[in-house]
Length: 109
Picture: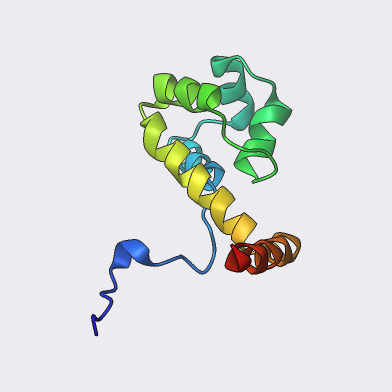
């Protein structure tokens, strides 16, 4: 019987991190206001604020704009967004019920 090895890379964090939290911390560290930053990257304040406060997803376009101004690599930010989305979906009771039903159907095949 083979034993399954556990790796830290396989762990799911208890609370998912939204990339907006990281970007918000970076702006605060650099003492850049959200309004000033929104103006610099050419988006509305509300669009930026909603993303920073986890009410909106980080898009590839926004990630590239942030990378251009702050020098924060877009690819890791987008991976964090994907991980956040997956964890939120896995924690959705409605989706879990749907998955369970699909697994019962798949077991028949």
